[in-house]
Length: 199
Image (tube, rainbow, N blue to C red; front, side, top):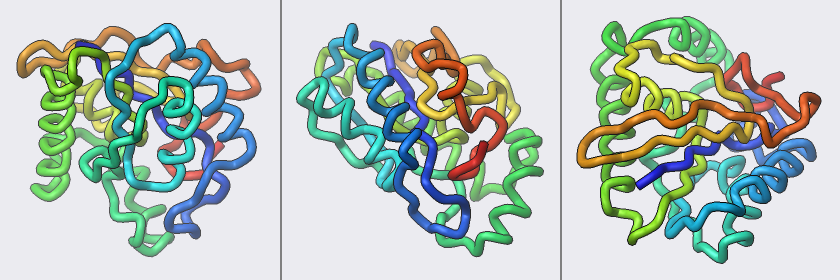
């Protein structure tokens, strides 16, 4: 079974908004991505509870007639309610780091993401592939697990990039990471940052 991991579209605001929706370009990215996925026959659509992921999932849900399943386990690594300055201060060094040097809380979060994605992908899809709309770091966790890479960010991911991972038993195998081929060059955003509304 294949998981198609979609990073959310460009958010309308940065860190000062605890749960921003999509910018106009983010909505455009989401619609283009839904069209790019039309060749698939997914049986489920799993979505982070945050507004930017739910809005990214809307055109995908409409394209396939799927009801989004909201899962906290594929949400952001850091609590969105952290003060903006604190989040800004920790995200850069964290993204430059490796998982083996993170604290137990972060490592437990990583394990939960991996366990959830393996469970979703290992027969939990009802016979078809699964689309998961999530966030930069959660998708990087899956890529790192599939490639045995300890880096927090093994691959940079643009908004609405598509990462495909095969799940066989307890193992993840990377098929393709962070493709933005469905977007025009001027529509590619967010490659350098996991922050909402980042360039």
